[in-house]
Amino acid sequence: MNIPQKLLIIFFLNLFATSGYCQQPGVSAIATAHPLATQAGEKILRLEGNAFDATIAVASTLAVVEPYSSGLGGGGFFLLHDVNGQNVMLDARETAPAKAHRDMYLDKNGEVEVDSSLSMEGPLSAGIPGTPAALVYLAKNHGTLPLSVTLAPAIQYARKGFKVTERYRRWAKFRLKLLQRYKYSAQIFLYNNDVPPLGYKIKQPQLAKTLEAIIKTNGKSFYQGETAKQMVNAVRNAGGIWQLSDLKNYQLKKRKPITGTFGGMQITTAAPPSSGGIVLMSMLNILSGYNIDKATPVQQKHLIIESMRRAYRDRAIYMGDPDFVKIPVSRLLSKNYSSQLRSSINPKKATPSNTLPGVKTKDSSHHTTHFSVLDKQGNRVAATLTINYPFGSGLVAGDSGVLLNDEMDDFSAKPGVPNAYGLVGAEANAIESGKRPLSSMTPTFLETDNHVAILGTPGGSRIITMVLLAALDFKAGNKPDSWVNLPRYHHQYLPDTVYYEPDAMTNDEVKQLTRMGHQLKKLQSPYGDAYARYGNMQAIMWDKKQNKVYAASDPRGEGSVSVFK
Ligand code: GLY
Image (cartoon, rainbow, N blue to C red; front, side):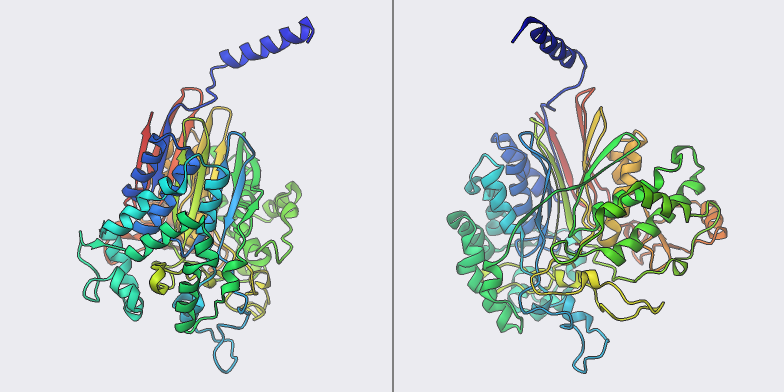
């Protein structure tokens, strides 16, 4: 190396050192929906595990202590930033079993009437799970600790039990009849065939064994061994269509995340088969043409709602499993297309959704879980995992102790059937053998020169608008505490209604927006305003300039955070 080259390198090294930006946070942070999961992640990080080891501990613990949200019998998306590599999304979404077909939920006359309980309850509602494959992959490719260490907290809680909380009781009550229907489910999740009392300990010894078998066989037991046999037998005995080959053929997929920019912020987010990333970027692209910070609160809400309406319309028309349908991603995210969408927005009036031809898709469950992890080296994970409806299909698969998902309900209910406007659509998300149902889960990283944010939330189709509102709040300079507390509102094209939390709109805003043509509906609950709120966001922010790390757990849930050296 000659002298000028050396000087140039020294100059850049000095610039780096004096620029005031920390390259590593030096502290770790975890935000999850359950204190025991946060503790499990912290324990692993304190054992010198990295963010990916902690992710295995958190995801497996949530699978035990939040059985109504996620589990080994479900799937999800893990957005990874490995300081040694590129950002990647692990797609552990459930797949339709080989014998699944597009008409499987039509009634016996072949009429278009859908027996919705078949796609939401019991053996026919369950897709082939992906979460165990992701945990094994993470351990092998990104982690530093063996599964015997990272799965230990989950095994302990499965064997020794965890205490029933208010939240557990609410969801058990919501699906009580379903849980009563299946012997193992009632034995494990109920007490005297009823909702267990507060503080009652739920023990899952069979699930502990299944987790131990995953350690011993590096996951093979779940997809090709004893657990696979137990699950297939249980599903078949209950009238389902799973085969051993469905589990053997399950493939975890690595996807390139959806990326984009908005007002100096870099966004890295979920790729298909989640619609989350494309819809999020599409809304931000539309909004990038406005000076949203300078707009009045009513004007701001109007423009945000109009962007939601348009992006969700495209979700319904174009999106499905990218291995089965060609989603025009580049076009949907292009500047031209977003200016076209923007030009259809009247700044003074709501656009009725029925003047924008499209198709209706089903609203998905508001359940699921999200967690965020940052380790002191700067590795990070945003993971959103699900079994779909609370307690999924309600079916515990025999001696495996695995509660199966009801993710099949995320496929289009009636592909090819004309909707209220006479349009045929939602083909992109029709049921096909081996296909993944379209999701809304949106684990996301936001980055500016000074900050890194890790966030996500459960909430079905409302997930994406929650992440949008949080991203706008991040851009406005606020911290995780503000993002998780934000009052929320949501529009998804059809129904043509803005749903809002009780404190999300003032009376005057409601009046003005109504005058502009918006139909608004305040969310209500017989149990009071606190229960009319939705979402359970878990978020972390690293301020690189001040080298400070902040974490916040949504006050709507029972989660907790930990930030530590
Ligand atoms: N099951 C909820 C989702 O995937 O969006």
